[in-house]
Length: 190
Image 1 (tube, rainbow, N blue to C red):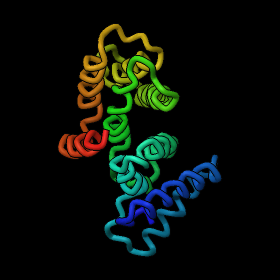
Image 2: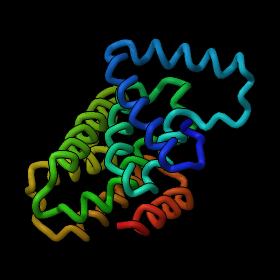
Image 3: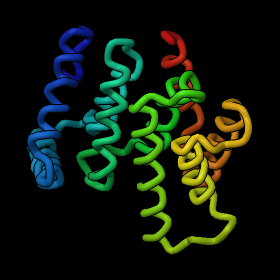
Image 4: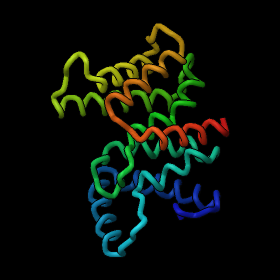
């Protein structure tokens, strides 16, 4: 259903996936390992991973916020092969940017959740890789997310977005074309 061309079927699949993630709770990694095994047994050649299947929802207005919530839930199991080859962090940042900018002055609970979880995730990654230098772009990106969540960034939202994208590109080296197309599609319905 996540590959359906019907928006209603696709949105139903997103809601079901949300319930599966909630039900799996601490067993998410095990469930994804079983999914990987099943995908390989089915010889599913064009499987784009869970993240790839979820991302379509960012381009559907009624599925946008649910898509962002699902992507946040994927952070916990980002390293599982079933998540797919997509770069989750750049996709999450880029797809959430219109919402974050729109609510820059008075962030919604979803905006705060996105920035806080990204701050926590990036801080953990920096600690794991032990690259805690003052010039680490991931450290700067984490700081920008923290400043958004705490509403302590001294400049306007456009300067904040400029810094976020610069540090994201420097630290994560994402596929620029993929992110530009995604941002254009997400901004199209805003």
